[in-house]
Every structure is written in structure tokens, then in C-alpha cells.
Length: 241
Image (tube, rainbow, N blue to C red; front, side, top):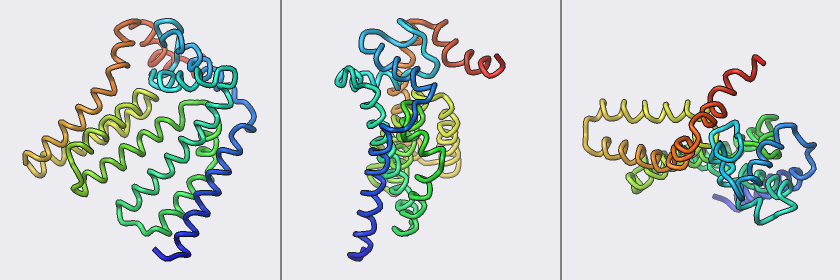
């Protein structure tokens, strides 16, 4: 990488960081944010589904509760800024995935920058919702998977990938679709190669996903009716009400 390319990369990342983090506190409040902010605050002393109704899979409030506790009284602004930082991390993994696939540094940087400028990404990156966290987990899982496919500590990285993919589903149920895609990939690889390595990689990925599902299953066991309503029934019925 030449000096000019290094300078360009630093300029782009610096601009994105200043733009997202600086802009996030001033975006007008969205009506959905109250659900995720209150869940983070309530989880300081209770659990989703058990002590209050939550309308998504439950990992986000479990992850954001310590932030809300640390910045008590300023949790809305703090979570807005943390969301922007998570968006930057998502972009880093997206950039890294492209580089793992052989995309040139300049093209990967340009594609990542254009992705940042889309309305859907900017919205998710600046409000307290469950848009960016599962996207970050999915991107991290993809990066780990691509690194594993390149032969770098395959078993460990496939476990990390499974953990990230599973956690993305535990944060937002719609991310089960790429999770199913990962499962189909492993099945196809096993059928094509018929070797022990492919089977071990698939088991490692599945084991990582199972670890991430432990708190989800535990909360379901504590309050199954509330869990089913919040995660499945409300999403199916709500749009028609």
C-alpha cells in the first residue's frame, strides 16, 4: 500500500467516525427507540419476558443493560453513541470481508463508503434500535468464516463464526435467514468433500451457535407464553392490527 493509499484510508475512516458519532446524538428521536431504551434500563433489575414484555429476541437488552447502568441518566445519548461505534465496527468487518475475497483495497473502501451513505444504514447507525448490533454480529461472523476458509485456525474461527451468527439471531429473528444459509453451506460442503475436516468445521460452527442460544432458551423456559408472543405472535399479528 502506498503512502497516498494509507492517507486515503485514514481520511475515509476518520471522516466516517466523526460523521457517525458526531451526528448520532442530534438525530430526531424515533418512536421505536423507547422500546429498546426502556428494555436496556429495565434489564438492569429484571429480565425480558420474565419481568417485562419485549418484542424481539432478547440478546440486545442483555448486552446494552450494562451501558445503560454505567451512564444512568444519560443512557439515551450513550446508547446512541455506542450504536454509531457499532456501525463503524460493522463497516470494518464489511471492508475486511471484501479484502478476504480478494477485492482491491480501493474498491473495498469505495463500496464500504457507498454502503455507509445509504438511508437504511445511516438510520440504523444513529438510533437506539436493534438494527446495527445484529448486522455487526453477522459481519463479524462472515469475517471469521472467510478467515477460516482461508485456512487460519479453522475450527476455532468456525466456532467464533457460529457464535456470532447465533447471537445475531438472538438479537433479531430475521437474521435466521443468513443463519440457515450458513447451515446449507456446511451441508453442501460435507456432501461435496466427504471428509472429516468439513464435518469438524460444521460441528464447531453449530456448537458456537448453540452457546449463543443459551440465554435465549433460558428466557423461553422462564416465560414461554410471553416469549412466544413477543418474538413470534406479535410480529405476525401486529402489521394487521
